[in-house]
Length: 104
Image 1 (tube, rainbow, N blue to C red):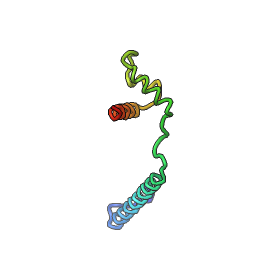
Image 2: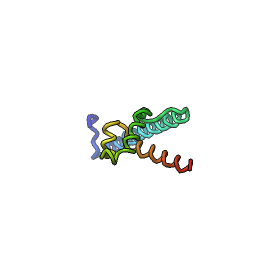
Image 3: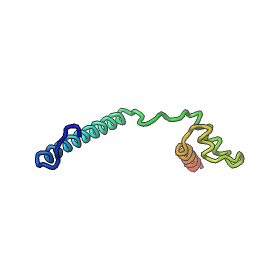
Image 4: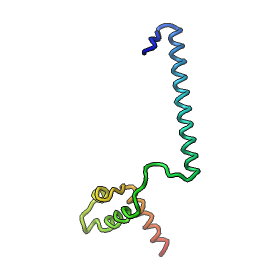
């Protein structure tokens, strides 16, 4: 817009197309480098994403989850009290149940 390219002329159209192609190329290069950086970090064993909750908080959430019926708690109530995401609670419960099945 600030370059005042007149896209009604053939020269303006080609200039607009070239600028668009260069912008797309730059975006693709940035995405490629970011992907390579994430892969390199994974290979080095670095944790991707936000830091996880402490084991103490997770154990508290699991204890509340196991007693939720008697205490009339929903999973959302447990999430609010402990800050442990629902997905973590369900995943840990699934892993615990699988371990119990293997030990039997």
